[in-house]
Length: 406
Ligand code: TMP
Ligand code: ZN
Figure 1 (cartoon, rainbow, N blue to C red):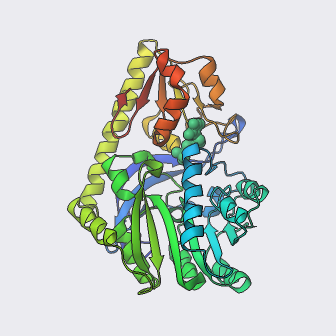
Figure 2: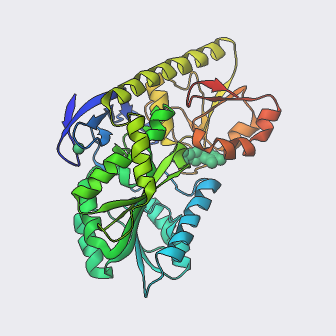
Figure 3: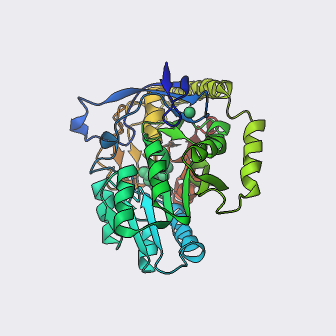
């Protein structure tokens, strides 16, 4: 299956096929599962600009609806991380007279609440109503819309140019990325910066984290592809920093060409990507083969444990859990429920495989023999929280970078 690149109109050839998948964050109610939406989850790389992207895309209105259940402040680690970013912006970028910061996909306001507290002009752009309302209750100003070129023009007319435009785990979700980049270019002040952090292709490939692929991740960014995209839309990649979130993300800083010095890290990461052949189709195909092996190993292990009469429960219902369970055919017969601390996910089921989501209390009330850790990127925080489970002989099953038990 071939497609056109959403950035440069080049050819995108499919390399990884994870089969028919539902919307990862749909979380239907148990009675709402009869007419679920499925699409073919195929990921490929553009022959020309090397951007890794989904071949088939789901309309954004279907993905980011009023009840969108993901809360960016759902872990202590994430809260600390985003508050730290806000502090850095306040100290390093928002220091002029009456500065202004806009955030694309501001979710529950985990970052902007700190900015609002400091009394700095800001605007979150967030189309999902429930999370937007949460952020408003924290004092954050929100435009409840999708960000694109025309939204950018309106923001600019009303608030003036932005010293910082920020996005976290949001920019790679937007299939009209070209329009977003045109909008950011309009919105940025002359020496403003566009800072965004998203799961990093190098980390996804190195760890065979195939569960990072789902309907919302329209793109998986690399330094090379972002550098090319920036140039195409009149911007320059001036800084990159690897951050540990979501199993390995990259924070990119774009500025107007010549306005900021280009950090040596940009060149260094490009070198690492070239050495690792990250921009090669064969690398993605190999990743797809490793994903298949992990999927088979996990299904095999769960089958064995079940045959031996062991009880396995899932821990965490991140969007990733939809990819894994649907890819491996893991249903409630194998994993009777998963627990998750997000209230808006509880009482619902994982899309496609219909595994019920319960509160973490359901886990601690009756420890299983094994816990399958879907939220593996929060392993440290979760294992510390659930220390008693391990102390009582419970074991954790992980499947990244390969299936193992700890
Ligand atoms: P994420 O990997 O996309 O951030 O999603 C993590 C999910 O795991 C989210 O639904 C919240 C859930 N979670 C728990 O249930 N307990 C925890 O201690 C943590 C850190 C996350
Ligand atoms: Zn392209």
